[in-house]
Image (tube, rainbow, N blue to C red; front, side, top):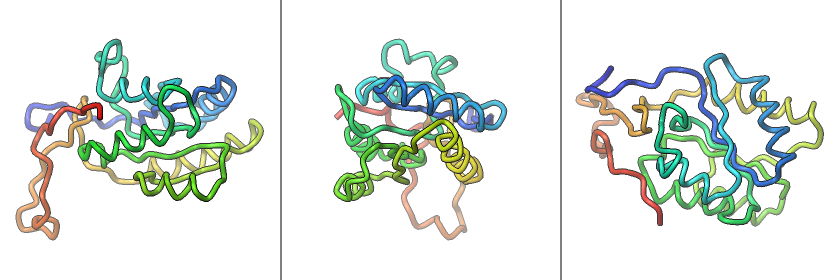
Length: 185
């Protein structure tokens, strides 16, 4: 425990957002096969549902059952909130800047790619075709992000306070311990 908040130290907690049942099934199956022990995958079927998950709204308030994600993988084109809506929500809530967010779409349109990065996407991947290729792609994604360092967060996703005194990053503002709750636009 740090500052009274339990530190999240287990495997990746993936929030997979895709309205296409077949794509979501293949992605989730591939992720579950390649994720390290202690990892979880939770699925949302729209951007609106994903935002409710992220802010712990309604049934998602139980963070034991619906843990704060440490990696977000979102499709682009979905009814009821598309992938750009998800990225914009994250961008408007700076406390979420510690969470990698990947666009995972059938679209290779350069405008979609540019817009995703402008809205804060950490990466943009075109969905591969077939189970074997999907597993390869998910393996490379998981290997990369599982090896990346991220700031410590508590069970609700709030960044924990660190002591930057005398360090190179001390000159930059830090989120207030606990930080504000995530909000809808």
